[in-house]
Image (tube, rainbow, N blue to C red):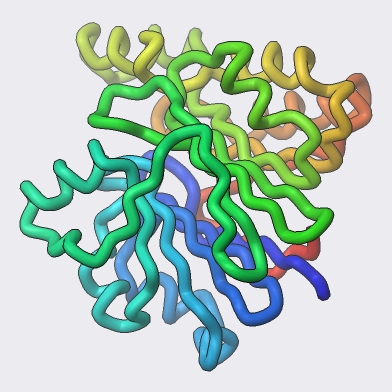
Length: 255
């Protein structure tokens, strides 16, 4: 049975991805209005399926549409304890949410999920590794730095959605104040283009088949430049690499 990946939105203004396989639809983050989903996606494909929603962390660009989405689709929602606590403080009913522990594998009927800890300036952020039979899809965005432990969860992915948020020179010369530049480039901020390529070079021999560079900054990055980096990875690391653009939804790519 085929596994399909879709990106509704990716970037500093909103993030939402989903996977389809058999009777399951697995969303990662819902940082966009529900209308954006219903406008860009044929939601009839969700009818009669089990809807799952995994939240990486509590920042607005990852949870903005969570209440309308829950009301519309009644998904099973999965978060860390730290994220649940913050969402509760924002007035979101988390009583039926499933609380996950980092590094544990959860069998969810038709697929399994492994949340893993990442470094970001929020309560308890997760990346996610999903296993659908022989197919593996991993999400690693909003991470200021990576460790060998993080790399372990990225390896051997059929599809890796990896942050490549900013170009260092553009950030330094851009409109952001110094304190915000420092936050973005810190070990609890975001992954730069340079660090993303360095990471790919470290894990390129582990069997990764395809990479999407994701969570691209609107102000501190350039899609033309990223396309060149993606081409470099495709040629030199022998991994098919593309860029997820915020305003161009990618719907139904077979993994």
